[in-house]
Image 1 (cartoon, chains in turn cyan, brown):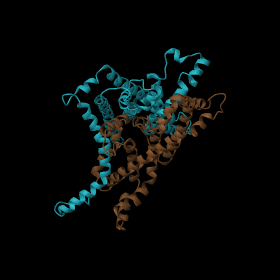
Image 2 (cartoon, rainbow over the protein chains, first blue to last red):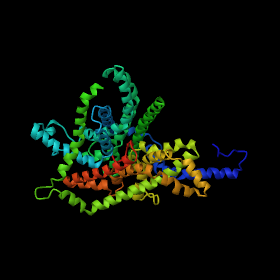
Image 3 (cartoon, rainbow over the protein chains, first blue to last red):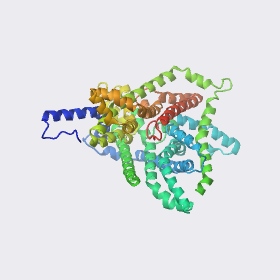
Image 4 (cartoon, each protein chain N blue to C red):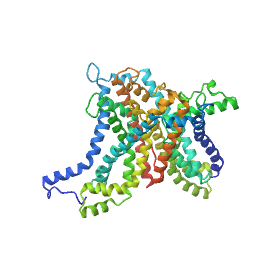
Length: 296
Length: 257
């Protein structure tokens, strides 16, 4: 640090100036993050442990363990885990088909561009697209019942429940997985060429090379997919008209005043979501850091 | 790999069907307003609706505000940490990616509970939404600013400008920003793609953005909704296309889900 003033040569006045000149550059970010990210989050935490008749209380967190709210967390976590794991598996298979040389090379840029678009095509329009396909009078539903004789809705399928929601979420989960895994798979492909030159078969390649190399990127990407769907609101709300019991939907009911319950309870639900997101992201950062070290 | 030649085409075809059929179904649905209507009826009714244009304008305005807010807070901090305070780099990055752990609905709950009951200008709903969009744009803008700074010679440019007598604001606005332009385009278009369809936060704050307009349309007019879905897809395709042309291999999580 050539510019760092030393205590012996710089007057207190100059040092004060130096600190001031430094902090001016960080003030906009600091003030904005404090006002609109940190204080609201702290406010949620304070709200979740106060408001009872006896000052500080854990009763709102206690209420999270009542059936309805516990179930909301359960469904949210199940939906995110299902779409993360299925999305990860399908995404890796698709990415490997594109990268590994099994599909013609000219398809690669098309797949990557489309993945970028589809991973951002979410929310209300995505719900509309799936209603037009798999809804009660959707194109696919009608095709299956008219030409194949399979009436999905008579067999208990509904686009507006857990399964339908999971199928819809995969539309942005799989492309995100493709984008996340293509760099690691490009790297793996070079190993694949070396392995097959040395006479390894497919099984040996995946067991001895593919899995060890991909383990951490796979775990990291799956965690990102989990987080990606855990906070999702618009797609679920539009598809189920807010009838599915997910934590974001329950919080939204309090905010829009449709269902009367304590704001402090909504705060507790929100704090629970932040805790889960921090846990998921922390595990991601730890595995990601190890990965970066391994690649060096 | 011999194995991959066998199943790769199968994976490719299944994926193609899964990704293309919903779009075809939407397109088909959007042109079936009824026998007495021309096939473009749904599109012309949308394009002639004043609510469509006003909601699009509001979302565009919010997206531009979010990008401006994001740049004003992220660029100076990232630049200065990069140039003079390397120890603070981790902190700037930490704060910038923090929005990932706060889901949009949670962020808006926090803002409404903290500022909703009167807090001067902060209790205004449009300002809350602008701030919330600024928050969700932080990770994306940080990444493009950070990549941009790494790909240019910040130190030499700064020293050259200073030794020629520029003031610090001038260095920032006439040297740093112009050199970051290309890198910033990528993040900017990504933020646009996220905000143009955003629904959760704007509906909670009672503002009629494009996302809210789409949902309200879908509740009453199914064919118009399908047409809107395609218009929205075209918009995302355009924005992401520009983003990918500018910087390759950028990945998004979070946003308008």
